[in-house]
Image (cartoon, rainbow over all chains, first blue to last red; front, side, top):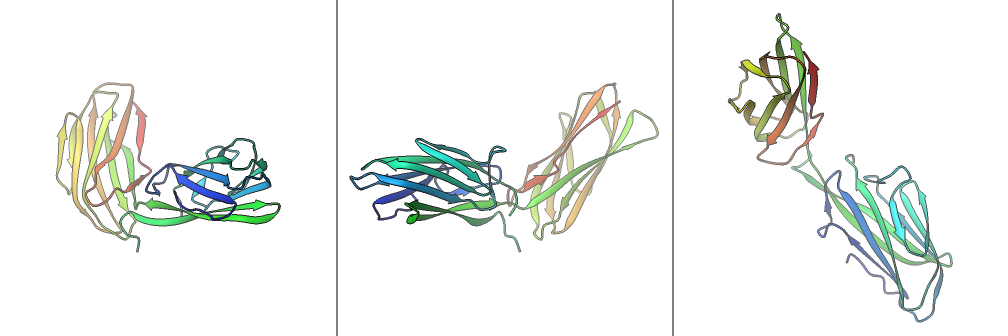
Length: 104
Length: 152
């Protein structure tokens, strides 16, 4: 676990390489969990992740993103996921996969 | 100066909005190990006799650091052949048709060449492969690592 926000909505992120160390060419997977700690549903949630230049998409369309019940929008160097609602005391998962490029 | 397999941290920023207001933030550091680069090239020069080929194998170090105890391997496949001559300032050995060249020290901004003369004993397409098998003091990234195909 890399970090945590002490709010009604909590963000956690894990990387596929436990030590967070990558070589050019490696696949990088961000597993992000958004938890709604409140019993009330959270509506109109927008997730925005910017990527440094060294992390590229896997495909022409960009990063491989999976997010159940979320609408994925890709921009250059950024991933956006929109959730209409996260139910109370529930969590959703966003998985973003990219590749480490060879240039700085 | 770039260090041996330098690690650089790159940051990915995550922001969460709820009803257009910021509801959470997270910065994820990604450590990327950037290895120094070595360039391998091969050049084919026809000799007087068509079945004789001179191959110039070169290793270029454009980095500002030295590499130690390197082992270059040259392999030829596809057509039976024999080595006529090998010119190298470094010690070399031919084992099971593979030429291994041991380079003890490759200074910064330098190059090394090995000239190989071979006699092709058949016809068809042959492939010449040049590899860096070992490097003692780091794991360099090989650029332009080449496998060249030619016809005789």
